[in-house]
Amino acid sequence: MRVVFAGTPEVALPSLRAVAASAHELVGVVTRPDAPTGRGRRLSASPVAEAAGALGVPVLKPAHPRDPGFQDRLRALEPDACAVVAYGALLPEAALEIPRHGWINLHFSLLPAWRGAAPVQRSIWAGDDVTGATTFRIVRELDAGPTYGVMTETIRPRDTAGELLARLAEGGAGLLAATLDGIADGSLEARPQENDGVSLAPKVSVDDARVDWTQTAAAIDRQVRACTPAPGAWTTYAGERLKLGPLSPADGRLPPGELVAGKNVVVVGTGTAALRLGDVQAVGKRPMPAADWARGLRWSGGEVLE
Image (cartoon, rainbow, N blue to C red):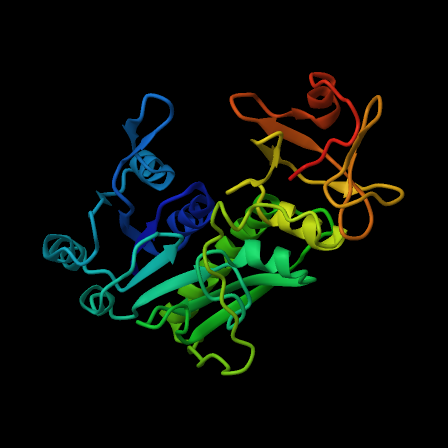
């Protein structure tokens, strides 16, 4: 088949490479426009755009896929299917109708669970034991199209969202390539999603990522891991924001938010058991072990995270 690939961030790269290495003809790549990055805010191409350039594949960067000019360029590529991984823009009906086999999306959950922008984060936060990836045909309703295939992945006890997503991206790349194979040879038929088990995974905002120390230790642990690396869990100390890395269990109990610093450890209280702080990042500082951060403070007793 003639395939156009749509994606933007680094997580889409394993799938782009899998499609490029497959028996299908990669005839184009669609990605988001160049965006300002870094301290200098210079315009930079997306990871997918850079990889596509190295592959020598034509790259389309529409401001929005509803642009008639973009749709004309896409139509001229005569794609049989468009493979999608984390593209980052809503596709209008006119664009969906261009490839004869539609737009085939790799979504990082076991649909119909966790439809939306943050399935990996929400799955960890909810305490799921297993997640996975699903290929499905995009329809107008959010992540509700008929599915082709799935893969499963165990959520490990200390997984962050970044670590879990990296594994799903690698495993999902093979699933996406196999789905395209099955569509091409007629061995795969899309099946409607079940009506039961639908859950939503909205984007995790910075406000969502603020830790409430009155919650249980288990809930806080899941929240911090779900928000790592982005948007980053946080709290405040002495009125200043403090970004938190993954935590670990500690002995004993403390009042919620109360800090106790030892020589090589800083422990904080929760609504249940205490937790040990990992890396922390104060405003304007680099991430550092919590014990190093604490050594730079003047401790008088009764210090709390707010």
